[in-house]
Length: 390
Image (cartoon, rainbow, N blue to C red):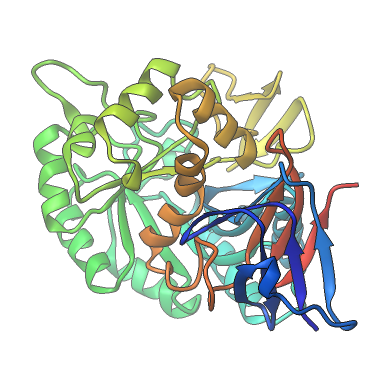
């Protein structure tokens, strides 16, 4: 049976299409064609939407800790399944399960739980876990932010090798502070193993960051946040990232992590091909204000803003559609570019653009329907409808 989506505007890899339809079967996009060329049979499921609705590729979030009361560090299949379903409801069709700085045995337990979940071959119920973003423990205690400073350690190749062996190579991205001892060899190792090396939670100088980029660092975790501030005589990691064409940068556009002028600055200085929208969401997302746990620390969420007791931002409650709406409003970014930052760019960063990140024949049928106000109406993960707005 085919699933046919028609009537709406299709934002395909080949361009903006009107009067066309997308045909899905066997988890893949099988055809994109004008409606005049589509033959519909009684066995097909046809979904017709208003012409001011949008069909876009599913969002890919490379930095998300939790949602709906669950967290990757809970290290259970139930938590990961709940996250998968909850993220799909906001249009996210794939993500990296993101860990926190903690005791090494706690991190290992979380890694193994992700491996078990990915290996389970269960029925498609939500967003696909693509692997793990290891945020810490190889970060700066000085710039730990909401990470536990007392659990930070130096980059350790042997430890990562052990984790990868036990957890089936689930680690796809590692955030580290490049000023730490052992970081140069560590970055070379990550590059050799095809694991993305990211700069984050760092007090690195400009020179240290440039050196790390030359060694193979290709990504920056939540640019500007938990980093040495820009100074006219010591630009730091931020300027190194903004000036490098070899580095992709993630940003949290929730109205709290970055001033609107900083978002505008990033878009003026950085190619739109090199910017990724992430949520950095924690378990409070979808639940409202209150007190929550993040990596063993109490987080107070008030009016949607998550903070430690000292006022340090502690992740976010941001949903990806809001990130798109925010960057369009704040930086006058057009819809196509905003979607690219949430879908295509993450897929390219992970090296999976041949399968995900755009609407094209032969790719995974990870699709999202947005209404005229850019609210999620439907989410399709690998060809299966996993969310419908009631």
